[in-house]
Amino acid sequence: MATGSNIRRRTWLGEAWDSTLGKKLFAAGSAAVLVAYLLLHMLGNLTALGGVGDGSPQIDRYGEWLREFGTPLLPHAGFLWFVRGILLIAIAVHVTAVVQLARRNRAARPTGHGAKRIGRSWAARSMIVTGPLLIGFIVFHILHFTTLTVDVTPLRHGEVYANLYGAFQKWYFVLIYLVGVFLIGTHLRHGLWSMLQTLGLDDHRRRERAKAGATVVAGVLVAGFALIPILFWTGALPEPAGSAHATVHALSALTARI
Ligand code: HEM
Image (cartoon, rainbow, N blue to C red; front, side, top):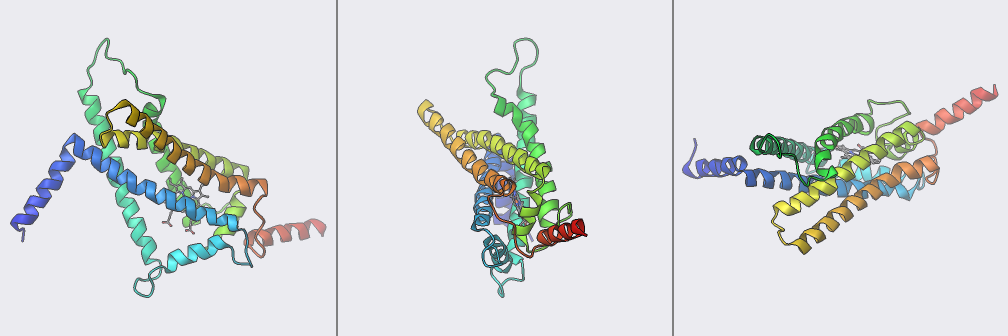
């Protein structure tokens, strides 16, 4: 049964969602959740720099720790599913809010001569291109490393290091991931900056500082993410011993000799 207080709450949330400022805050809040996830994901990826370890690479142990986090209080991978749920909600809120805001903007824009877009940066206009491309990249990425559906190179559940090693021996995977990382950098730099504007930075100096801050956060993410495919591709990170990839290598060397 609906009580007075939860009617008030629904109305408050609904009203916030309907207003342009509220929608911008929803877009900014969901983006903040996604950026926090990206920073953690990038730091997690950097555990690959620990190399192969004593037969159990650090990134594999990190993956295992994530799957086991909270057990036995939570079921196996329960924490991961919780994070996935939050991510899905954040992406849905973000995409819906920005699409509705863009429609409102377009409807409010004057038409006819002299109504050309003035002062919109390349990054601002590129949001409409980088956003959908990023969604495409994320879908591909999950089909690749999470569900292991794109199994061009040997992929095994739980063998994160070996999976990364195998994939990044192929130039086209390196290229796809570097393009994905570039997309996230461009999208983030502009997105973060406009989010800081939404939060009300109106004087020139603070705006310039916010712009520089957005560039630094995006730059750190791009550098941190790009490092992994580059280091595997250049051979700076060693081949995992006993992996499916190493076995395929050994077998092809053997058949070449026969
Ligand atoms: C070169 C850059 C990247 C590398 C090497 C990388 C690596 C990985 C790996 C190995 C996994 C699977 C972990 C596992 O299940 O064992 C994963 C999952 C994932 N990555 Fe990335 N990633 C990169 C960039 C990105 C970017 C830019 C995004 C987002 C825009 C992203 C979003 C995700 C998501 C959503 C998952 C699924 C997490 C889950 O629910 O299990 N990744 N990544």
